[in-house]
Image 1: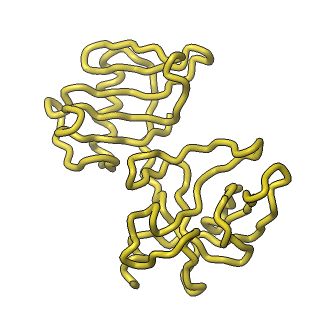
Image 2: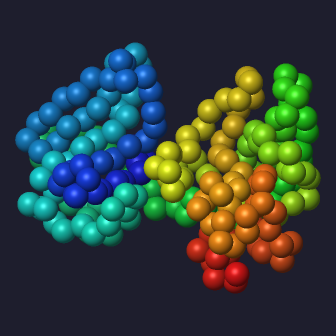
Length: 209
């Protein structure tokens, strides 16, 4: 399973949280062995998350919120899961989640008076269908995309979903949603200068302002 990693010792305790999606809370079951809890969706048997309790007994981890693990730490977590008796393979998702995108197509949603369906390129090899409700979205724009797995400043995680029956894999962001009103404070999505390359990280975009 490819998972996002979260850690906040002050907020939730000494627990590393690994998650790979969301489902109805009523569908979840929990199984704990030693310091490992596996969270499963009972309706389909899919593992939705793994919690590693008392993490500091095994290694130190800095950060509050989304965290990246070293290869050594990832291997340590894998060994802890195996030692507890769970036959699961994990992979920590280390991919950059906030990147510059290019809106290649933008068409009005047939079942909405304000939504648009975009095909937005986020790398040389990846185009995401993203449904967007901003009035200023248009074909040919450079925009800032929160890819699936992105954690917004509000704490919300962007997961693939549907809007009015259309699949949507990500979010085209405004500066307000990114807490970047000091860079620009306008309604609608953040329209970036055309010189930015597709796939440029948000951190690198901010450096130029």
